[in-house]
Amino acid sequence: MSFKNLLIEYKERIQFIIINRESKLNALNKDTLAELHSALSDAFNNPEVGGIIITGAGQKAFVAGADISEFKDTGSEGGGEIARQGQTLVFDKIENGNKPVIAAINGFALGGGLELAMACHIRVAAENAKMGLPEVTLGLIPGYGGTQRLTALVGKGKAMEMIMTADMITAADALQCGLVNHVVSQEQLLGKAEELLSKILLRAPLAIASAITAVNAAVKDGVNGFETEIGEFSKCFTTKDLQEGIAAFLEKRKPAFKGE
Image 1 (cartoon, one colour):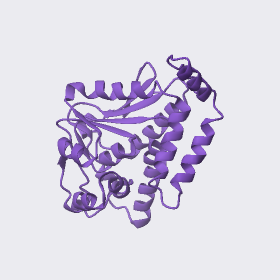
Image 2 (cartoon, one colour; image 1 turned 90 degrees about the vertical axis):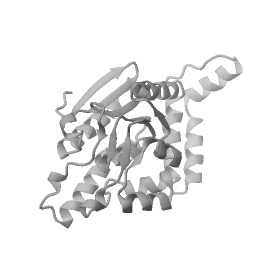
Image 3 (cartoon, rainbow, N blue to C red; image 1 turned 180 degrees about the vertical axis):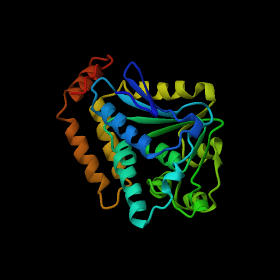
Image 4 (cartoon, rainbow, N blue to C red; image 1 turned 60 degrees about the vertical axis):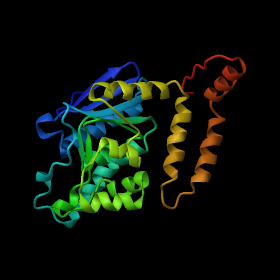
């Protein structure tokens, strides 16, 4: 499938999704969100794809926000639909996907761009990256899960400060407060993301999917995360991968997982 606003590349079992609107600092418009939904659906359903790396074209921006021009003359009902559609089709889809997704933050990650990165399971940032949720400077608040995911990652106090001041923070500050997992040079960014994902892809795919579900349950209202963990733990006992893992452990060899 070809896309207007995305570049799709493959390397072994990794699918790269590159947001390719460099002249617009890779801002998320409706068409780009629709393409992201399609690309993610394809990747999650493709047995040849083990995991996904999302990044932006160029070195200036991962995603510098939503395309604000599309918000003009939008009322309350329309605004709610924008947020609901975006969350359902893209952001929640990433967070609840059955395969690991890593954000390689190559520059500005602002507004919807930071929300996109936070929906990913792991974040790696280039040293020059800057992150923030500047929506209140427009008379808005984050609408793609930013208030919820930022609070879960950095705590209520830091989330309140970042959202209400609209200040950007550096990659180093993001690392210190737990917003990103790693900070590397721009030249090392994709290599580090690949290194992490390649290590994850050595593990049992069905167990990885269960781990994603269980960890996500820890921050979902009305969900008993301990019960979710027990349920996912028990599901693992139905897999051939567990039997392979046990056999490999006892035979002192590396396991050959097949996702079965």
